[in-house]
Length: 453
Image 1: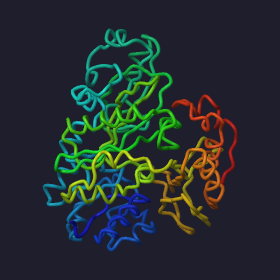
Image 2: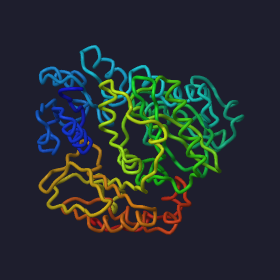
Image 3: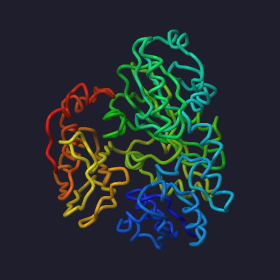
Image 4: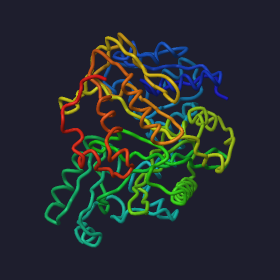
């Protein structure tokens, strides 16, 4: 087992790694930017090293600064969390060359699955259903291919996500200008302008399967997470199990995720994402890292994914097989609470938190790095907390969500907690019959919302 782990990240995920490491008896090193000097993860770690100024490219994305911090503190492993360097195969390769264990997938697997287009090729070989689309990245005129696929289609960036480099094309006349716009945006966002095209599914659900694989050939897949409720391609609410899946479809989806992982010689944690419509599912991409919404799976399956990924990275075998991984022990919902202004087009709302009251009680978990007196920096993602609710069934989980959201009190910055309460209380969401256009179709965010909850 590792003696000391450096956490190449910040905020609540860094806190999460520290807690898991401490329970395993492992020392931790926090790295931080000058803007994060007062963040909770810095105070919680056994050691801390400042690696640069506020902007990410000068700190958390500075590979040499991270590796230097690991060397001077004597760390033997590096945990990337999510975002930043977590899916950077070059960084994980560099970690190995410098003598550090990267707690995540090996570089070869990341390269196979880290790009949507190459991941789709692996899925095809593994007999995993894929959305009809172009073969590989687009380098020539594909108007004939798109005509054969049939409009409407969706242009997607090969690297990255979050809706960047994504365009809907409904007519042949739109194809060329939208391809150019998507490539330009992808280049600006990810440093890679390659794109590809898929058939547009008009009423899909976004469903994903959490996997974990050890270094001994064992792979398990957990019950699905339904991440259908999104705004501008950003996930808002995640739940498990999905109200749309049957046990048979769940088993087929898990089996497909395992086939894909084995085809890529995948190790450690990852998430296989699918679109689901009319009883059929289609592979879209793999997130070769831990997901923001991993606590949903932890609650439903009764496992500690952070502990498991550390143990697997240290060479241990998975302690259970697929039958145990498939157990559904409750219904869980995660709410991403962002410091954003709902009355101002959800603009980020950095600033000082004057006071904060967190909800509690049965089935309520809060993952956060903020506290009263903490100043939210302007350089990073606006998520300040994750509220994870678990209950014996979905109706109880919805009621518990409303209760917990009502107990959450944050003064000093505006948050999206009120929006989450609206989502949970909406009849369409309560029915379980919705798709990725839920927010737009219901007009849920058209009305003004309370600044704080």
